[in-house]
Image (cartoon, rainbow, N blue to C red; front, side, top):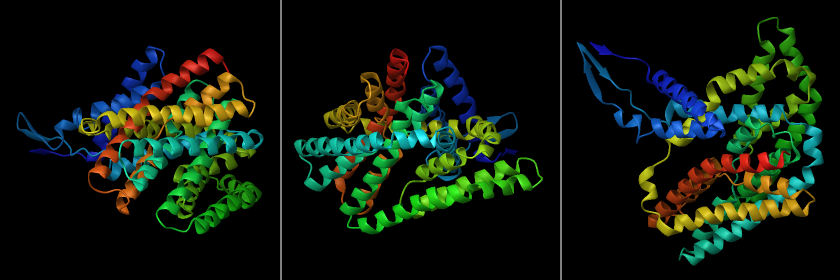
Length: 400
């Protein structure tokens, strides 16, 4: 007989179990568990368990078909994307808005440095390796993007997310994402002015209307005499804000962080924080990091050669200079500045999205497109793996 089980259940079960096992093993050697979750992704990807995808096995009179595994698309991708949204939502809930405002000037300067320096370094590196001007600009934009999901998870594990460095990193990452999106729109011939207006409307709506009426919205959750109604209303707000953020031309993770920040300023948020953590850390967040590891295409590393190695070094050094040095100039201590530079180093979804959009619109094509996309993936993988190690080393020494 044919043994059938909904494929998504099997994929999630395998991913969750291995994420916990690998995370535990990495934690035992005193390293951030997020590294183990990414390594678990390698184990279940197309070069691990995924190699069994769609194969048939006969056991007694059963013909068991191993499910078709695709961690980059379909239902699993939705679960993984919810993971990063939950992570940024929790980060917002636990970030003090007054402290974020107090670090706002520092975050702005650091964000500008974190865009300008990688953009220039990437542009010059591209030209040095023989890429055209437009291709080199795209390389610079790819290096400008920051993905703080891995940084936030690591800093939460190390209990330094509430420090000046942690708050500054989050603020700077939000701002440099916005700058990068506007620059990409300008390069592709879009309307940066229209995009700026939409982004402005998003933040005006978020921080004026929402802060003014959020108490009434959450009060609705308390008036509904059903179990966890307040949690339901809060999660609905999370989904609405991520949709609104994307419609305004910015990323969904910014929407998730912003609504978490707004709800976190309300006293009622204390009633939902632990429930949100249970759902996020218990299911969705590990799936995001497993998805990161599982989506790695190993053959891509074969074709990229010296260019990729140089770009990986440039990607790290440019953030250390553009963010770390600027942080020092704003008055932060040497250790804090180093942590900011390291924390801004990871690239992930925005870098890949930038490369993908450039290919879609014909700015990148042919061999150059393949090489730059492969290099982007290499940068994402390497920075994802080394950033937690560097953050732990810096934060442990500095105890900030």
